[in-house]
Length: 266
Image 1: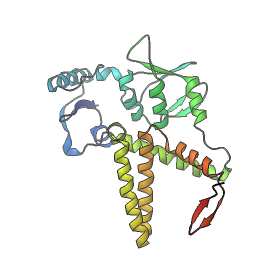
Image 2 (image 1 turned 90 degrees about the vertical axis):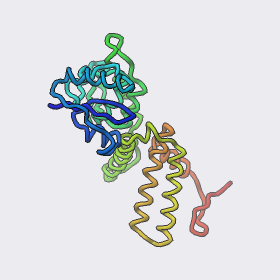
Image 3 (image 1 turned 180 degrees about the vertical axis):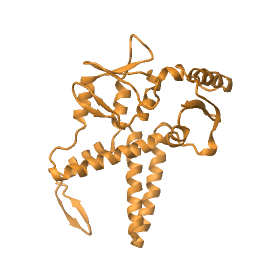
Image 4 (image 1 turned 30 degrees about the horizontal axis):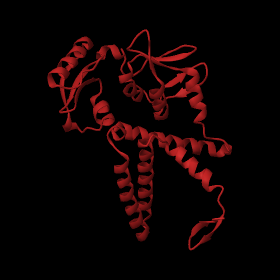
């Protein structure tokens, strides 16, 4: 097992087993935008060397040694008791480790959870540093179970549509994970996403005028992606926005006029 010490000039120095996944896929940097400074099979050496180089380059210095985060970087070994789920990392490292373990199953006495970006967001809002070890943090299982129940959105649908709805819900989760890995939620803003939305709307208008079906599909899909990210930047989930909109329009009455539905004002 070879640990790699990577350097993103002007940004940071870190350690990873898989720079392609960690630096390129998760952080969005291309092959020519970072360098591998050193490689070693000695996790003790590489952990201390990371701190040394962070200091010498003037970057933010990690409070916890790499070797102390987890003996297995790919699998986070959580500790589940009757009351709590404890993560073996400090709060300032928790989000990255959770994102590394998307899809991991957390089985508590209350519920079975599959880790996705929505659950990551909830955990980050509710995790508390352990009073016995500041390099560990935890959440309460009952509260996590309540969150799981509150986000179930399958009431009033037929059995034959369940798989389709689950697939659609997963797609929004995939979009949010894609955006997180590329730094959109950490470094983007709502105004920029709105400008992007207007650009995509213009492309949709052009595609409609040309009756270009593939471009229509592409433009609508791009707009959904942008709206999903815009909602998240506003600390909202696109699913909740859609639910809210449907709850409102489902009560409207009106009639079709000139190709559009006009609601009654009385």
